[in-house]
Length: 290
Image (tube, rainbow, N blue to C red; front, top):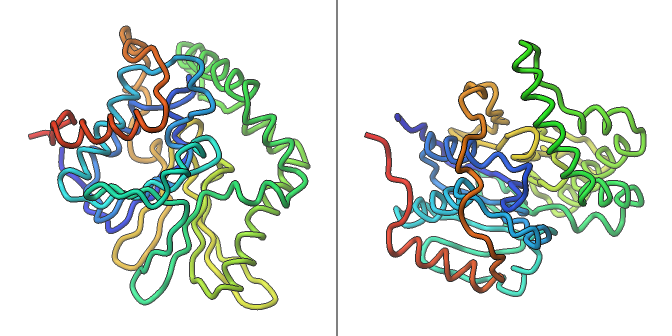
């Protein structure tokens, strides 16, 4: 597979360890790119849901691929989110090209991008209570039902649909939360004189210029790998929102027998970091296709 050279790639909200994660698609995407930097902007490993004891081989393949990229010289920045907040006690941890942070400022050309997950806003935005409920068991059950429904729709020759998107778009409170989130991020970025503010958290891929009373900033959101299968790519001075369905055939990534085999216990954060260390140093990652 020929790899696309990209200066910076940002992904977030992968939620490894949950039934809704599209791990196969993410591994395929990671194999298709050759980034100068890879930024994992929170909720990559869903420690909240690890009690399910669900860790299939396809999810482990994502971790192996990421650490393999770091082992080959790609700087990888893991920024913590609310679902992997247990890793925050390891903030400022460095292991070769692997860096664990809570937030970062990234120089891009002659400009600066302020990058963080975005859950910090939940305490200040009243509507966050609704999203928190949606982000729990009910949300993941909805995603699981949605995937089964889409399988039936495909058999009938119908287009896929997203139940959660329809619900979010029809509930005024949810729409207002997204708007408040974006505007709050933009206001803070303008105040601190950043040119870009890059978030995740709300599962809404976006790129738009936000004008405030004190200036303007480009707001970007990397989306997620539950519903949107999206990322942010920066190359040759320009950002773009990548969407998997625009570049690849989703029908080639249907669940297959054996996908759910793998780890059956939930490691604590220190065990996760140890596993990453062993993978990176023992070379247990997917090699480039010839």
